[in-house]
Picture (tube, rainbow, N blue to C red):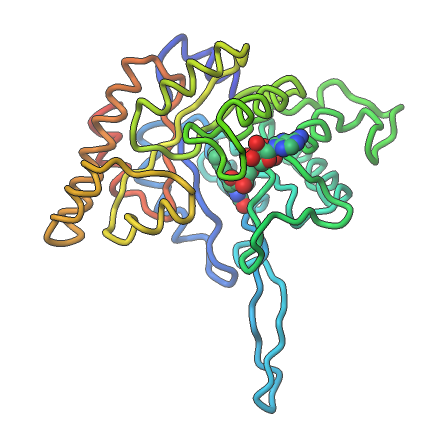
Length: 318
Ligand code: FAD
């Protein structure tokens, strides 16, 4: 079922959902299931599965020589979506990237989604590859997420690779796109970034999922500005309970977000990671309570391979 239908059917009740990351290449899927299992009691109607960018790895060639190779360390997004759907009977949302895929590969991926009964996809540009300082479009691939939205919307309509005569109106995906309550790092201003977001919605995006944020005011302002600009699709907040002291530097660096001073100071003072987890859970609970009062359609949790803390948060709310 489409995410927008899940939201409509919930009749104003806030839904619980989560995002998972494929395991490292060579690692089985069981650990991923162990992370999802404890969260199924909160009845997520959908689970997102990320797609990783490729990265440079160095492999030994013998004679002390190293060879640089480009590889994807966490492949298998679509296979994982299919497994999760089969095991838990929930909808899955594969993340589809511009970076690392040609238009033709994207087309085949979308065709596979249709065969698997996947109704929703998240359309994203992807970040620069590790070792590159800016995003470089893949040869034969899309440059911006909006190009991907147009492609996904046109599947079966002949604009890309499929035959126009075989157009099937049922082949319509529900499309999610990313939004940034703290602005995307490359955008010169929030207004500019919101205009780009509006264009993605006008091109056919059905809902927005936000980057994680730790200060609700940023989300509330973002929604207000988006609505004022005429962006009227659901804007789903992304939540991440902080779990380690290392997150204090890793999350801002990786996701280009700010952490509130109060949160930084509480975590810095914590005596160990058990105490940090407790602070992270309490912070997320209070964030979520306010978001529930605001009437958000879904609370979407970034699991990043861990579910215990999300369970503690969800137990207080759902
Ligand atoms: P875009 O919407 O294309 O925007 C990128 C930048 O270009 C922005 O600064 C925007 O303002 C600007 N821009 C957009 N359109 C235009 C235009 N037409 N002309 C000029 N400028 C333009 N990354 C992964 O690798 N895998 C994932 O699975 C993944 N999942 C994510 C899930 C969520 C909910 C979020 C919020 C992010 C996720 N990301 C993921 C990260 C995402 O790929 C990066 O944030 C990336 O840098 C931007 O992606 P985007 O889709 O927002 O890009």
